[in-house]
Image (cartoon, rainbow, N blue to C red; front, side, top):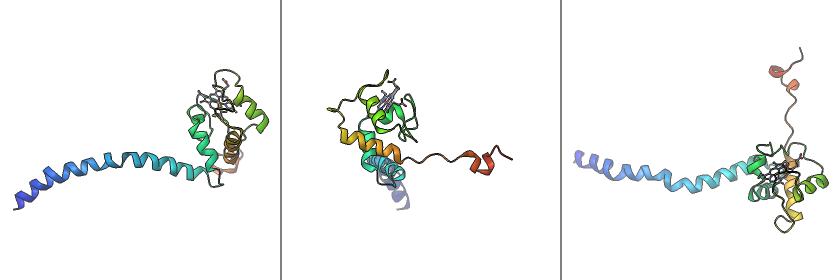
Length: 133
Ligand code: HEC
């Protein structure tokens, strides 16, 4: 009986348990985006963040606009006029986003999201990092 139970556990249940992480994979991936969204979006700029992600801005500018292949966009994004001019007609290698692809409304929301990203603390305000004695 014990032997039977043991082999039942090993042969039937274990493979099932091994499959569990696979079953939850898509849900986990989705959850991550939502969690991340919540983290950066306390100020209620979830829609702007979604537009930023859906239009692929994050691929070159990072999820928080911190910069990657493209320059950093936040904190302190350019004023909206300059910002939108550079999205509609980028300076060099960035693909242009026309109003047909990315509406004015969405671009404004993206700008609001970037504006909501808090500035980093002044290192001198953190005793361990301070250069002032
Ligand atoms: C394929 C990579 C890529 C994607 C996708 C991309 N950018 Fe860029 N972006 C760049 C690069 C590179 C630059 C630097 C200028 C250039 O080379 O065109 C730039 C420049 C900018 C600038 C000007 C920044 C400055 O300080 O001069 C803004 C604003 C900007 N991007 C916003 C956006 C937004 C908003 C999106 C999404 C709708 C986006 N970008 C998508 C690569 C990208």
